[in-house]
Image (cartoon, rainbow, N blue to C red; front, side, top):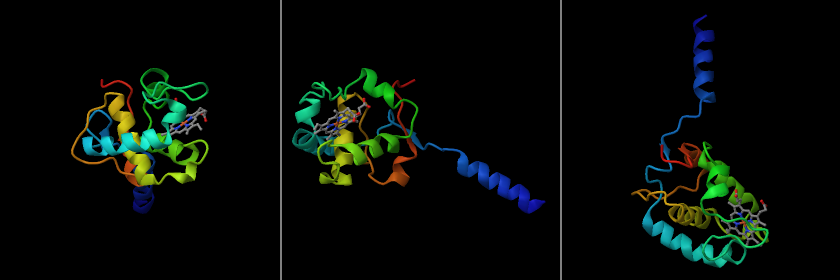
Length: 136
Ligand code: HEC
């Protein structure tokens, strides 16, 4: 009985997604966003625009539809999307570390505040950060 109870508790703890932070609490650094801007201009801007405004098929990565697409989700989902599918013409051509920097830059451009710890690139750590379109 005790073992059964303990496994039920363990299972419910595992299935809960426990967020340690959300994107309004400073989850990247300014230095990282500056590096990310260079990589963004190198690998992303030809399609998404130098102001993240979107060009033709490539959507804007600024405000509106973009920030709401990922609302309420752990940020690893957005990171995974970038990791597996972007840049569209060569998703494997850009490292995870550079992609974390690029995401930091995109966050800065969307007015999420910076903090003291760089945005991680490991799935296990990104999972605990929640993307919220609005601060409250
Ligand atoms: C060759 C053109 C091209 C390049 C280069 C490119 N993208 Fe994209 N991206 C697209 C297109 C087209 C879409 C929409 C179609 C789709 O969803 O796959 C898209 C969609 C996205 C989305 C989903 C947007 C949303 O509203 O949810 C993200 C995020 C994204 N791109 C990030 C990036 C990043 C970061 C880079 C650079 C590392 C990049 N893209 C480089 C063409 C490109």
